[in-house]
Image (cartoon, rainbow, N blue to C red; front, side, top):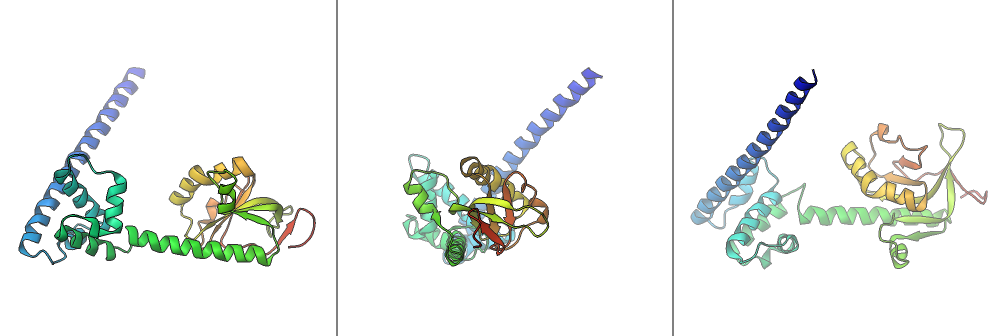
Length: 253
């Protein structure tokens, strides 16, 4: 039985390797074909949205398609492989791309991508900042003393939530008898899905918990209710700013 399991394990591992090699080869073939069709297209009409149409044809994000072609172009024309920062800078400002036709193609991809790319990143950043300002105003309205992210970084903290409450508060939960102590609040101007929430837990929330204690995450656009499963461990989820809170000095906020 042990020998059979061992053989099955080896076969499964070998199948994973073969599948990975196949995917890598398939991706290389696809990229080569895309590059060939792109070059043929711009030769016929350099002003036409060749790269954008290719991305739409294969159901690929235009900005990611632009990144692939830009990387290949720079690899062929530069002595050293392009750094990620250089590529990102050119995607944010296509006028930096030395080839005018490619710069125009990249620009068309960026402005027509509604899901990825530097333009979408700017929009997300602006929406996130707007909700942080909203949260700040709500904290001031409740007369709660706090330190924001910039103040915390000035004190030497490298990874910080949006706000640390200088006087911790207790959030009264309508479905529980006792409240939950809150030391920090993180604002997320997005919907809390399973994938993004687990990434945030790993990269941010548990680090905040280790440094500052229990805290609150506000997903302004809602979240999957089952994800709010760490309350007893000290991480609470809400879809809005809590109204039923008291400070630890027993004065109602």
